Length: 343
Image (cartoon, rainbow, N blue to C red; front, side, top):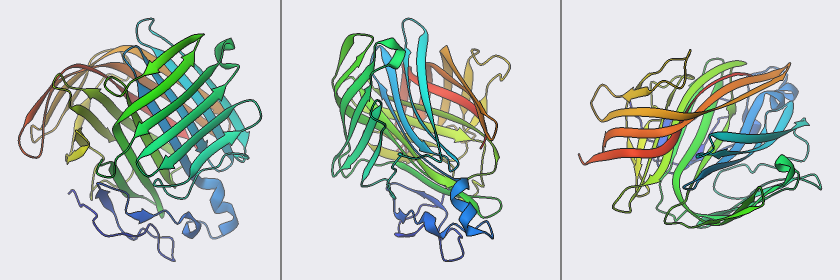
C-alpha cells in the first residue's frame, strides 16, 4: 500500500496525467503545472490550480503561522497567532483578486515566495540548508506582527512528500516538513519573543494541485522535543484523493521519516473539544489528543468558502518506529483539524 518513489521525474506527462503516484522522503518530482489538462479549454485551468506555502512556528508559549496562497481566482495572505496560556488567537487575512502580487516558486526546493503591497510584506526564501522567513504586518491586531526567522533544513532532513490522484484528472502534490530548528525573533503585541532552536521548531505545508470543488480533510501534526533532546514529529491525515498507493501518515524522529500505513481517527464533530483518538490497526500508533483550544476560521466569498476547526492540544500515547523503538509522548503540544472547503 505504501509505494515509495525513488526516481526523479516530471509531475505530469503531456496529457496532464500523473507520471508517478506514491510518497517519498525528499521531493523528486518537477512540479510542471503548465501541463495540467483536465479542462478542454486550457485557458480556464489556471483558475482551478491551488498552490500554497504554509509555515508554522511552535514556541513554548505560542503558535505563529504565516501563509501565501494562490487559489486561482483569488489569492490569500494570512497570519495568525495562538496564545496557549490565554486560550485565544488573532487572525488577519488579505484576499487578493486573481492572486495578483503573490509569487510562489515552481518547486519546494528553491526560489522565493513573496507578497508586498507596500504595507504588508511576507517573504519565504529557500536556501541550501535553511528557510528564511521575513514578515512585516504593521496593523496586525493594532500593534503589529513582525518576524525574522531562520528554519534549519540540512540536506539529510526528510519530509513527508506525497502525490496522489483525485478523480477527473485532478491530483495533489504535497510536501510537509516537521521539526525544523528555528532561530531569530518574533514581535507581537509589543513583546519580542526570542526564538531558540533548542525549544522552538518550525513546520512547512507546501501544497500544489487541482482539487474537487467541494473538499474535506482531517490533518494532525506536531513538532516537539523529547526529554532526551531528540526532535519528534507526527503527520497524520485522511479525507481526500485516492490513497491506495500511499497515505500521508508518518512519524518523524530526528529528521527521519518512519512511514505509517492506515491510521484511524475517532473524534466528535459535534464537540471538537472532546479528546480525539488516533490509532493504527497494526498497533504502531496509539494516541490520545486532548484539545485545550479551538481555533475556528470561516471564509465565505461566494465562489470560495471554507470552515476549519484547528484544535490545539496535547498528545499522549505511543508511536513505534521502523526499527521497533517505542516513542512515548507525554503531552507534547500540536494540533488536529477538520477542514471543509468549497474552492
